[in-house]
Image 1 (cartoon, rainbow, N blue to C red):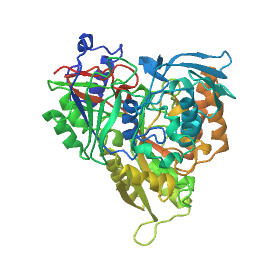
Image 2 (image 1 turned 180 degrees about the vertical axis):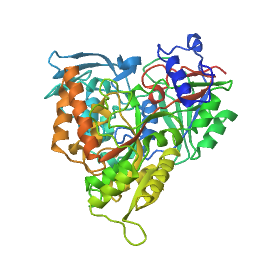
Image 3 (image 1 turned 30 degrees about the vertical axis):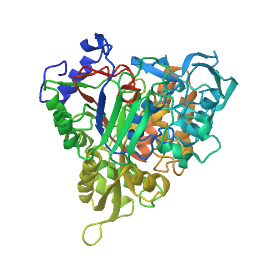
Image 4 (image 1 turned 30 degrees about the horizontal axis):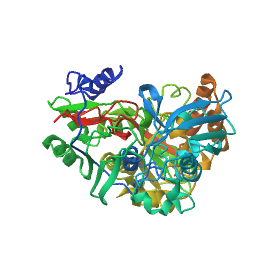
Length: 536
């Protein structure tokens, strides 16, 4: 059970979770001696397109990445860096050089030795080019020097304060250079047959249904992982996922992927642990993108009108059942060092104002009452994106916009929105990251408009003033000045509204109490799971 008293109010529920995790997360069972063996079953949705988080920021891939692959660093609570593939590191006083001393004796799953060349190829040829957030994270990185097999040196043109918060396996996995260098990265067969250095190896993969990982007996962290096997099952219906958890057919659900009311009920049920802990690196936001290539949506008054037709608080309370905060701007509510509403344009529910803006934009109501028709694509990642889209459809109908809701799987969504650009509006959940540079910039920085790069600047938004603010914030070392830059960024973006932040969502992990140490740091379910054990 959770460590708080159950109340039917979701705000109190979340407050109880926050209270329970304000101190370092060390449950009573974490003090027991770990036991080796057993199979852990995770149930989730949607199924991944790839098995490689170096080329996509999609949730299914990031959940898997830390089990197959590893990063240079891991992170304890508070995003304190910990050794992983790098045993130690040194940042130059001017911030322009970071030297990583790599772990010796590490091998890839195919037996080949890990070296500094793997780091260089991963960062310069894969993450910096193909990863939606990596393009921002490594924007000022010009070279990865490899003076020897056990040393990698990042060389930057300008300091990048957020970089050291983005080097874990789910964000910046290190890939095997001997299998990727010089290849067509996006079509490399290893993308669906992973060869990593991580604690688990691929045993079986049935696309769209299930994935089985077995313990890596040659992992450098001797004695780990404790689990013999990790099974991921992909089940589309949230209620079914919850029923599987309760019936013992699954052991863990991450990212709140069962119905919110079921989360609350299980919080008062013996045999389950629920925690909001472990999502520091991936605070999530539910966003609505406008395709600015569409001449109708290129008109800012149309976008502002749509914003005035939506009740963001209603969405938070009735779609996410209070698990989050109504969207107010591009930065997540939990990023308290930068979040602000001061002087940031707000769009209260006002259908009359919306109608007036549409008239001013040159789209009066026609015979029958409609002004124009649009389509919204909802990423099928839980039920909430579809329900949010259906709510938006009904709201826009009241101001004369005929909106069609279209839903597809992750692969179809990415192709339509980020490759073909064949959409009007899209809605999806994206990670704000541990720092705005890592998670937020990609949605608004014009240099992140690149066909095929998923979950980046899908709207096609390009504002030189915003670009300048983001690029200055990337390198600003003074926290107060950096906060000012992000305050102005929030103001300008909410004037232009290329993207509507519908909700800053709160995510939880729900697990059977026999699952021990599933959340021990800032990475939570996106980590290696090498420390997880079962108290059968």
